[in-house]
Length: 285
Image (cartoon, rainbow, N blue to C red; front, side, top):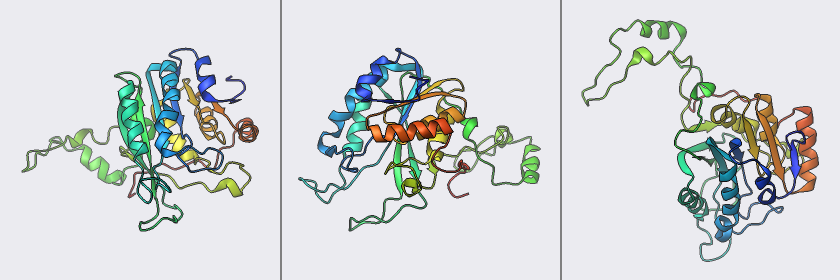
């Protein structure tokens, strides 16, 4: 499967073919509820639909491995909740936690170029959720891999490093050791990840919801080790596989829709992801 890169089939059937405990990172953006013509899943039954995949992913995940899911809630267009935000995303998170996945963190994917929506009375959706779950208590996580440049210039950083009394306790009783702040070579980017949305379905990529490579890049780099195995069970246009291989990971994806499989294989073979490599930065910088 690794040689093939993108495997055609339903992940619920293909996931058991992975050796138990072999996957370092499942990174995926599954079909959103009622969002695309190629996968109509009613939000009322979304959790029921997703849980079999989650169970099989848990078996295949290493003790230090993770499951990272990009997902977006939606406004219900029918039923008792019509016109309201449907809670299926939050229901899914709680069910995954009950299953045994450890809920490590919630990230916000900030989309500075999000398109206006059509549902009032509300503003456009300019963010999506990314949930990080882990199999065990000590998941692999490399913060240094995603650090961003400091706002302070080099001269200011050098000056602060001379401070021998770095812990400045405030009147409120809090402080921080500033002598260690700049030893890592970059700032902690925080859990809001700013990546422009990719509108490449008009540029030759035949998927209507292609993931921007900057989003995959962030989590591949921090949540999987070099040489580790990264798997996307809903591979779509193949972005996760392309990006993971670029950063020296083993990678493969499963994709149900044959048309997307062929396009994704071409992109994996060419090493081409959705857009130019992202420049990571903290929100506000």
